[in-house]
Length: 430
Ligand code: FHN
Image (cartoon, rainbow, N blue to C red; front, side, top):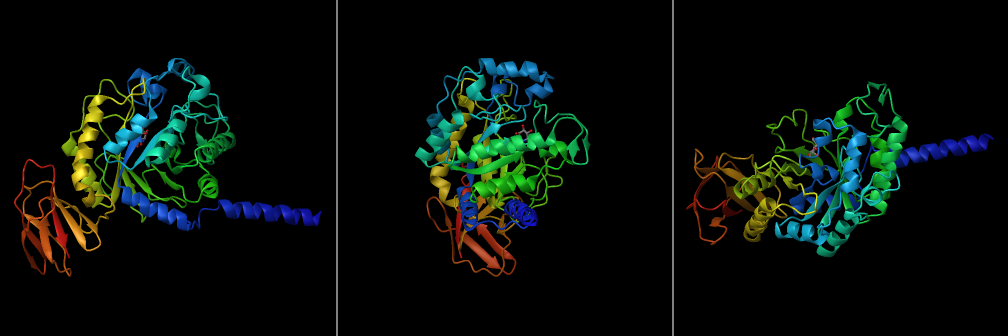
């Protein structure tokens, strides 16, 4: 008997050891994945779900106060016959994107993949009956694009989540918190085991229950146990938590808070990523014509890289499975820009100097790229770098020498600026 108790204790202890993330030490493969992630720099975010039918964004159930049992009907007529995973992946490629992060389950609780944990999923509940995430995983693997899954902690529909319930002692008063945590663990296990090429899990929505015990230790521990290489990030808008592998920012560069999401987002020392929409919405919104220009998005990409962050740019496909032409045109133009300027973005690191009024700097070892985004900025193009001897400055495109002066305060550059360009890049050799 005594021996059995000891054995049980040992088992419990060792299980906890596996799951404990408070002393999380990323594996060598995870550290390698982090460096590769930072090299990739540019990814496609995809918000797609049954909400796209209503053409009013992914929050439509909540914002239009549609009761969940009515909202669920959308599944009956979700039949995206024009969806073609190869087309999406090729679009990402022609935009110069290196990875895709796609919603596997958003706050409406609908699973866009085949799951045995709930019949409210695209294969079992729609006339479409196909698993787009499996098709996407296959197309990504074929085309050399990395795949990551967005997964919502928040669920507006499940009884065990009991949306709206008061949180007492870390649990909702109503519902069944343990059952909900187990449900998520089952789904995450499916997402990792059934889609073995997945490289990242992008969590969102725990901000809805700030005082709940989310069992991060168990959830993050489970993911790392299933595949230590998988990078975990969560859009909780705070400092990174134990067990996370990258830090996310929404609609803002790290350190900025123009959107109001990042007030508490203390920057940690993990790889960074910022996400932004191509119009004003994440999910397909038929009434949103607030399209960002190629210039705005290239500048965001450059500023993100200058800030040492990846840029995850969102598209919200339509209910037929197509991505609207206003987005595809812009993406292809960004890709053309990257065809020329990719060297100054991919594989670089940022934060050499803070963002300047004229633009940003990206770097690879002893080569820096000064991206002049706002040539009219006051003070000319001054690079506040000391104790680094400049050997030469060149126009990145035509390789012509650029005049400069260096003193104890930094480097003053005197380039000829082509105002029609989205970005004038000066290559600095130290
Ligand atoms: O509520 C979501 C929203 O729908 C979208 O998914 C964004 C993407 O960053 N995150 C949440 C808001 O913080």
